[in-house]
Length: 242
Image (tube, rainbow, N blue to C red; front, side):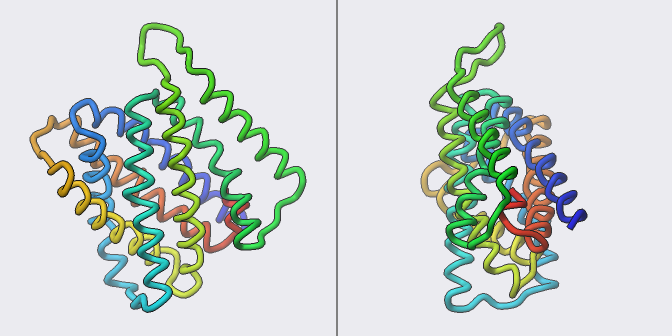
């Protein structure tokens, strides 16, 4: 549906701001601190949705939820934002262009979804562009320079994103798009905070600019982006959403 496609485009715009705000926040915060505060803010914003639409997750559904949460939140974003720390915002944002290809291929194999030839062709061009971006690590000018290791870490993190998307889609028909979004992010945030506290306890003394960037990530690139994404995902195939 046209509305679903518009929501997916809105999600892409919101999610892309995470790289910009993340770079600002990580001028003072570590990668772990930035990701933790980002998702803590996002989780707090989603609490009302969980309480309003709660349906218990039992058995296989609970396993799917926890697996998607751990892979999709702490694992994906700790790797991705470590890569962002090493490379540039523009490179990190553009490399995400390979995600649609990964989603389409995975959806075809796992969910048996199909795309038309022209759509596969466009996805192939997207992946090729992402490859060229990752390999063109010779920056120009005097500003921050791209880094091949950082680019590859961002690329690797996208595989975790695919796992989260495919597994969370299985839960949407039973629990609804908004509750699944909220439950996944909140569960993943709990796992993230436990990992961070065990490895590198959080600090809280940062400038207003750093806090504003972290809060903006939680509001726009986390709560807003994922709500739009899963709503669209409930109304169209995962491959086409990608």
